[in-house]
Image 1: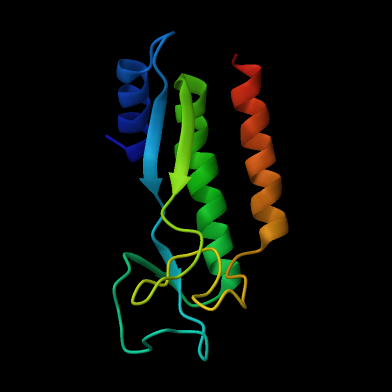
Image 2: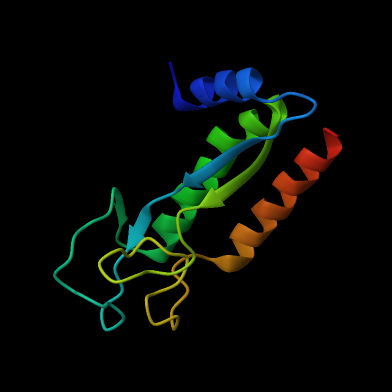
Length: 123
């Protein structure tokens, strides 16, 4: 069973007209940016990327391939693991010092808006 199939099954099982289905944490995509790390030796993340382009591509694919079917099934909300890197974790949208965007924000924003429209259309 693919992850999105499992997600759709969970959403269909948990979501009711009076109860929202929410994914409370997802992501964990990391990109180390030299000179912008709290601890350069730390290696804590699950999915590692070498470039912002690769990280952005994987994130967009995750939203399209895994989240879109869940939205169609009734997913109401999802929360990315963290907006910024923190101490030994480097999986935020931006670096620990908040100086470097680690994804293409324009592409991520466009995908988020598209997914919001899908969710709104399902209401």
